[in-house]
Amino acid sequence: MKTINDFDFKGKKALVRVDFNVPQSADLKVTDTTRIEAVKPTVEKILNDGGSVILMTHLGRPKGKPSEEFSLKNIVPAIEEILGKPVKFCADCIGDEAAQMSADLKEGEILLLENLRFYNEEEAGDVDFAEKLSKYADAYVNDAFGTAHREHASTAVIAQFFPQTKFFGLLMAKELEAIEKVLGSGEKPVTAILGGSKVSSKITIIENMLPAVDNLIIGGGMAFTFIRALGGNIGKSLLEEDKMSLALEILSKAKAMNVKIYLPVDTVIADEFSNDAARSEADIYDIPDEWMGMDVGNRTRTLFHDVIMNSRTILWNGPVGVFEMPNFSAGTEALGDSIAEATRLGAFSLVGGGDSVAFVKQFGYDDKVSYVSTGGGAMLESLEGKQLPGVKAINN
Ligand code: AMP
Image (cartoon, rainbow, N blue to C red; front, side, top):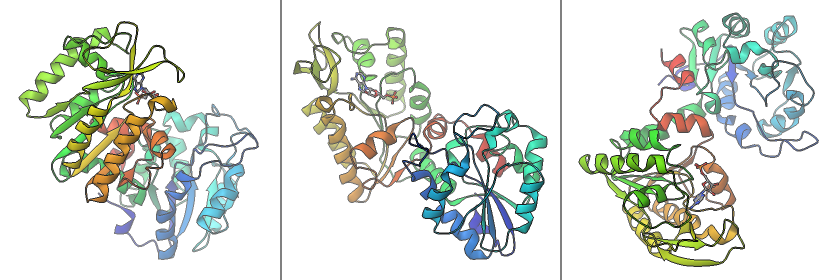
């Protein structure tokens, strides 16, 4: 993996693709700066070498037209505060002004280009557009893991104009190393915990991970399709009837590959899909007709805990219950506690994919696990075994 640590940026201009697609308040202030903080090490390394940094990113979905709402001008103060340096801003990412401001950039300075998606060419992966951007700098750095699964002009196409000077940023490198660990190079036993609502959205991940893991824990809504397929009564719990045979197939594949699959053994049930519903507990195979499974039960929490405590490498994707409702979040919190405890004792744990980050943040597990991925979709696609265009473009 060629990272910025393999290059001395002294006197060089680096065009750094970042993912500053940050959430904003109604008055356009940045409400969560995680994505900006995440690229600070990359920017600092280049500046400390004596180089200069040209930042480029998209923000929102401006559909190929400039707009106040999606202007990066609004996020300059947040970037300056986090990087601790002034940031120059160019109000158009293409054109004479951008070329001039890039050319004038001195050692240790930072320039931010306006939203790339003000041009349709960005998402279309237009080669001329990519070439125009490439002229501003001596080196290209991709540190935008959140968009690495997109083959856009600035995330992938542009790399061809820097055959010798294209690099992964430090955030990208960290993300790729974390994936690598859970997909094979990590210490064994490796355990993947997959939760969430549907089997259909996780099927490719399960199939891709089977050869890499020793244990697979399946929780959340998707577990009920397995339990039903195994002959259980699941009441009104979430079911994907057309995925039942696939569920059985997965179970036999896992057996053939010596992967242990752990399904819930009991569940917290509700008489309707609401936080205020009546609650009870049931064996996972014996849910009363009018009730539905909303969270994992106590015996399941202990079962999952024991597996996790015996693991050295852990991937967590998806909640094991309806964690948005406080009455059904305890199972997901217990799981988070188990993973935090295993991590404290030396296991490597990665949380990521989809909106897994939402619940680790909500429950404060983000600094109790080894790594929280910054890219939902990109992480999911990596776990599915897909080669990300942004990664391929640097490696080629
Ligand atoms: P996903 O986006 O597939 O990772 O799914 C996340 C969603 O799964 C969350 O919104 C949870 O509320 C939901 N979920 C987890 N467990 C259950 C369950 N037992 N029944 C219904 N939905 C669930």
